Amino acid sequence: MFDVRCWVFDVCFSIFSLSDSVMSEPAISIRNCSVTFPGQRPGESIDVLQDVSANVATGEFVCLVGPSGCGKSTLLNVVGGFLEATSGEVLVEGQPVRGPDPRRIFVFQENGVFPWLNVQENIAFGLRRRAAAERTQIVAHYTTMVGLTGFEAAYPRELSGGMRQRVEIARALAANPDIIYMDEPFGALDFITRLKMRADLVRIWQSEKKTILFVTHDIEEAVQLADRVLIMSQRPATIQEVVEIDLPRPRDLDSPGYLEKRDQIFRVMGMSLRVGETSGV
Ligand SMILES: Nc1ncnc2c1ncn2[C@@H]1O[C@H](COP(=O)(O)OP(=O)(O)OP(=O)(O)O)[C@@H](O)[C@H]1O
Ligand SMILES: [Mg+2]
Image 1 (cartoon, helix red, strand yellow):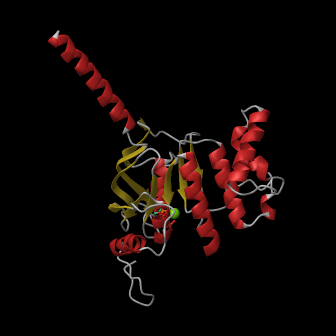
Image 2 (tube, helix red, strand yellow):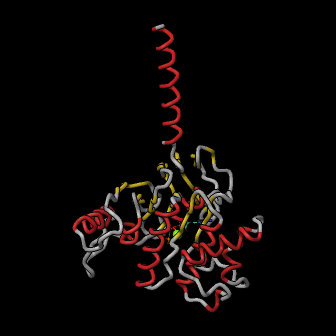
Image 3 (tube, helix red, strand yellow):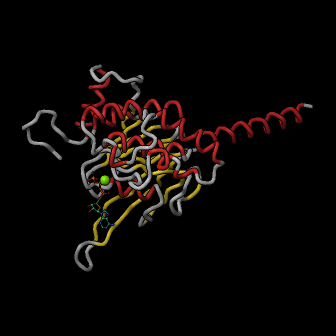
């Protein structure tokens, strides 16, 4: 009897351990990735990433910051399957990345929308295989979510930069990806629009529960958005430090906690907060 109970306990324990390990498997696992590009002249090479390792948990919002040219877009391209690492590997949901995957969507800085399609056609772009009624319902849902109701028939040339960017985010969400990769998606927008877009993105992320890996060189943006900020060094880039942003949302941009996190990242990046002082970047 005792043996049987031990056996049952063992089996249950194994099942719980297994489910625990499956549940805790990171959505994205970057393992010792290095990237070297050919240089301008024959025989030259340029080391961009050096032994970069990092994890992103399922449902986590992670920002990647670092100085211009350090390799943020390169890393995102490796994770997204657009570029093969020179060495190392990336696992997404436990599987090695071999190329782009429709379950994971990229949102770029600008010009992501198709100029010849109107707003609802752009948002419906990834939904061609769905039944017409379902497609209409999904498009309506995301049009409302990003605040573009009334502009369904408008073409990108008739929209502001912020509205175009919202179309792109709606299109990415409508495709129902597990993971969204964003490369400076708000970089071309003015200050006020950027603030609004960040608030919108956090609200959408909270309701849709997606995993987001977001590249920015804007430290304030990273602190406003992320659960964790990965700080990349100068090239050849490594992950210099990881800063957890354990601040409640919506975030108070004047709170001591917010300013402390922001200043911590500035310090790690060797940047001065006073305009006119010699900056390390
Ligand atoms: N296909 C390529 N061939 C050669 N060099 C490249 C290639 N892509 C990027 N690089 C080089 O790799 C380095 C990192 O570029 P990357 O675009 O990843 O930087 P970044 O951190 O995204 O910069 P930014 O903040 O300015 O967008 C740069 O020096 C760039 O010139
Ligand atoms: Mg870039």
